[in-house]
Length: 79
Image 1 (spheres, rainbow, N blue to C red):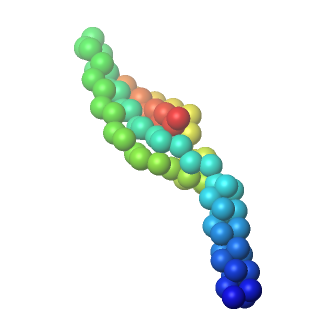
Image 2: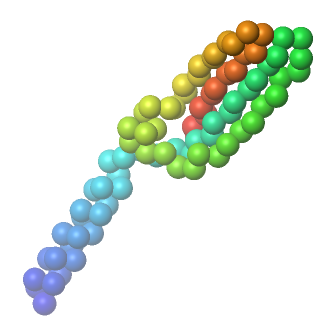
């Protein structure tokens, strides 16, 4: 009985430790395209919950790409 209690306590401690170490956020990806002289067109995609290095790679990242008269902006928003 004592060994079972110790095992249960160890498993609970380990599971709480693993969940507390990694921060996670809900993230969205918004792609906005503007053709010279036109109105912007945006598409937002829910990326779900990102954690650890996946979150670090995208959180707050914005990039733009211009091809001819078309500008595409990609923005990650995590909360």
